[in-house]
Structure formats: C-alpha cells, structure tokens
Image (cartoon, rainbow, N blue to C red; front, side, top):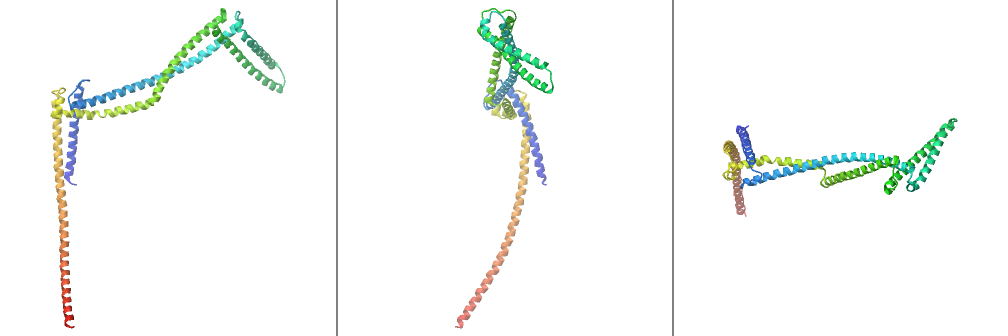
Length: 369
C-alpha cells in the first residue's frame, strides 16, 4: 500500500482533532458571549442576527415548556376532578338513601299525627289498604309455617310461603313509597299545622339532608362543568400525552441547534468585521481563547496543505503511470502500423507485378492477331 495514503489518513485525523478543538474553544466563547447579553440588549450585525436566532430558540423552548406545564397541570386537575366527582357521587348516593329513609319516617309520622288529616287524606286510604294486605300476608305466612303434613304438603307449603313472602316484600316496598310520597309532599305543600315529637325530628333531619344534597348537587355540577371544559380542550387539541411528547421532541431538536449557534457566534470574533459587532461583549481574557483557536487553525491549515501536497504527489505519479501506459500503447500501435505498412508495400509490389504480366499478355495478343 502507498505509504503516502497512510500519511494522508494521519494528517486528516490531525486536522479533525484540531478542528474539533478549535470548534470547542469558539463554541464555549460564543456561549459565554451570549451569556453576557442582556435579555433585551441589541447588537450590530452580523452578531445581531445570530443573537436574534438564539433568542427565538429560547422563546420557543420557554413557550413549549409553558404549554407542557399547562397540559400536565390540566391532566393532574382532571384526575383530581375525576376522584372528587367519584367521591361526591358516592356521597350523593348515600345521602339520597338517607333522605329517602328520612322522608319515609316523616311520612309515616305525619300519617299518625293529628292536625294533618286534610293533607294526608289522599294517602291514608293507600296506607290502610297496604297495611291490611301486609297483615293478611304475615298471618297466612305464619299459618303455613305452623301447618303440619307429609312431604307433598311440605313442598306445597314452601311454594305458597315463597309467593306470600314475595307479595309481602312488594307491599312493604309500596308502603315505604307511600310514606316517602307523604314526606316529599310535605315540603311542597308545607301545611300550617305545627310539628312535634317524631314528626318534627324527622322533618328536621329530612330538611338537613335536602340542603346537603342541594349543596352537593351544586358542587357536582361545578366539578363536572370544569371536567367537561378540560375534556373539550383535550378533545379539540388531541391527546395531552401525545402533545407533550411532541413538544418534548421539538425542545430536544431545538437544543441540538445551540452548539452550532454558539460556534457561529464565537466564530464572529475571529474576523475583524464580526469582532467589531461583538466589541461590547469582549473581555481581555477572550484574547487568549482566540489565540489558542488561531493556533489550532494554523495546525488545521498546515495539515490541509500537506494533505493537498501529498495528494498532488500521488496524482502526479498516477498521471505519470497513465502517461507511461499510454506511451506503451502508442508504441504498440506504431509497431502494428509499421507491420501494416510493410504488408501494404508487399501487396502493392504484387499489384505491380500483376499489372506487368497483364501488359505482356496484351502485347502477345496484339502481335498474334
């Protein structure tokens, strides 16, 4: 293998190392210079354009982070709302059951109290009818339980008991609904008669439960409204997790632009025109950085020059080898041309001899006519 190619590889590695070292120095200088700029400070061109680009990247990152924080806050708030709504719905279910029981106790107490005959008249007949059915079914169930007999009697008795128990449960449930209806109607009509005893206690308890449920309904409505609003925002703009992922990828992409931007900013100090635009930011210690960067550039230029010279030397040798190859080809072709010329001369001689014989034959023919 040509040793000059090994030399070129070594020189290219040397050039790469010095280029990277110079880039690090100028990149760090650029980052330091940008750090010395105020948030609203302005610089003349060309530094001003690079600084504006940097600030644009910073604003984009800040805006993206703000959106991410907002999405994360909304997601956390939505979780809080879901938990709160679930808890309050459970509380609502519990209070509703307690209210139903309280209204039933109130209705039963009102039907048994004096002074509310006009208010309870329409319900009293229903109560009496259901109580009669319940008592009848209780008696029949008791009678069946006490009845004795064989296996078949026992089987028929159990079937009848099951029927009576089903009817008993249904009528008791209907009676509770009547009592609740009386209790509900009490708060609608609000009779003038004064409450006392069990009725007063039941009414007070039911009223407290009604107020708690009303307040809970308002709270649930507010929580569900907020949940719906956040949900509509997520629905319109897409999944928050995917949006956060997209924004984080964009932030990572933008941050990858900073090293190149710092290098561009620091590289402005290498040339006179760029250095003038950075004059307000430059410090005495920056001179040592520039000198060091210049030394690396000298090494880069020297390596590049040697690479070019070595490649030129290789190219010269390649051209010489190609010339020698072509020269050999020309000599070979000339040999072939010389051989062809000799053959042509021989053929022309044969033609001349043939022409001479033709003339002799023509003379012979003419003389013998």
